[in-house]
Length: 262
Image (cartoon, rainbow, N blue to C red; front, side, top):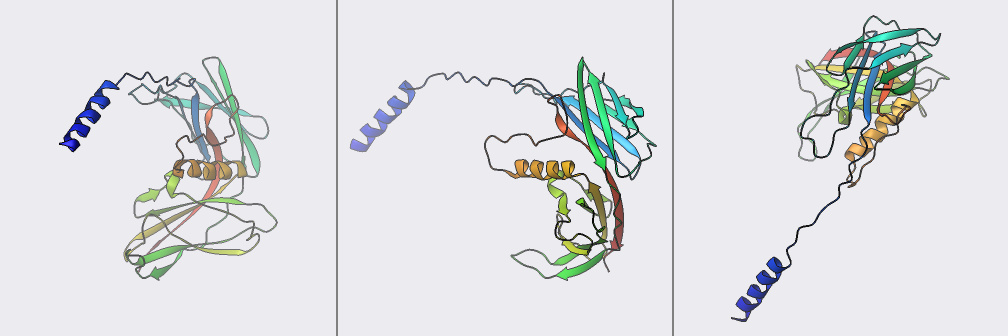
């Protein structure tokens, strides 16, 4: 009987204390999000421009279709990056000049944004090797692929590595691997790379070695740290855009190798 009385008092207290709490979300100012990549491998500049959306906006971020996008080489020659549609701009057949800095200019709605990125020389991958690993910690057995290349001597290099299998490329932010040459300058590099899963007999291993600027290298590491953080209030990674835009401009060179596990 005593327990029933206590329960009844608790229920009455719960409902009597109920009130509407007005939470002020204080929406942040709208910002441009500019994701731009210049791949020297296929001589293509790709730019996606959107805006941050409201907390209450159910739709995807609005795309920016009225921008003027221009890339400028080290000699100061501007070239227009053409609008394709739905916030996407592209320039094909843009031949690279390695070891030089490119500037990307964006103009839209009276706002201007500029970013610069250094394009390093490509570093050639050597043939992929692989090694069998038995099951561990309850996982499956399989093969890990080894990254092999000769790091250029007396040159500071930053690398991002992308793995894949058969027709799939694992290029999500969380999949990208990184390495600098602080401890390997001028040496032969042999490193096992573990992707989403170990490879099996008959799988085609794909590997891409991207040579990037220090700015993009740091941006990728910081972005991965933020995405993987358990913090309740993650920030935005430091980028190379002026004008308080989000995103990044990355100019990079690549080399690739593939092998079938046998």
